[in-house]
Image (tube, rainbow, N blue to C red; front, top):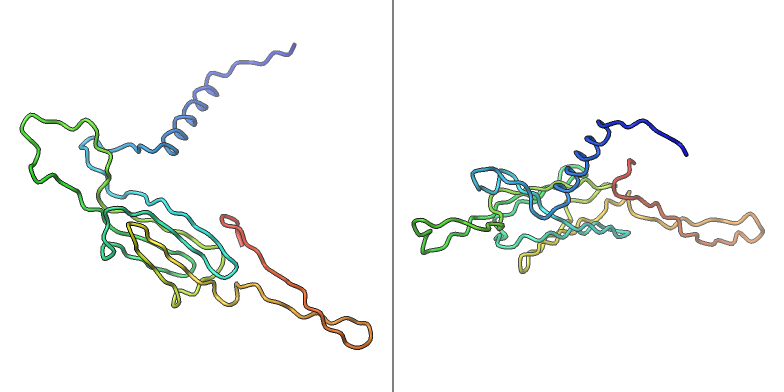
Length: 173
């Protein structure tokens, strides 16, 4: 049987890390005490890489297309916008209080850095039923290419070998 020395600070740090992870991964984000949604809301996105492009999809319910701004600078895409607060026309009766208020409103933004250069001039953005889809073609230098390989044997026979450069999101180039 082996014995080890108990370190109470190690347990406290583990608890703090567990609480941080819980808050970061939960659906309910901490909110300011005044009940507002906060200054900057996050925007959940899905990002798909194909051999020739990146396809980003974001759900932005209740936001009108003209309330969304999409910019590309270098290899970084930024989506920003604002969700308007939806208020009931009847107002809030005197003596009432909110029991649950989870619908976020206010400014939101999200930046995504790509693993290879993109051709921003040919990017497209579609907005349908609260879903934003942005397609960014990869720059020509980032696309896979076929390189013909000649054999040293007689006849100068040429065969093509598929040579592809791959990249993974989150890795340094």
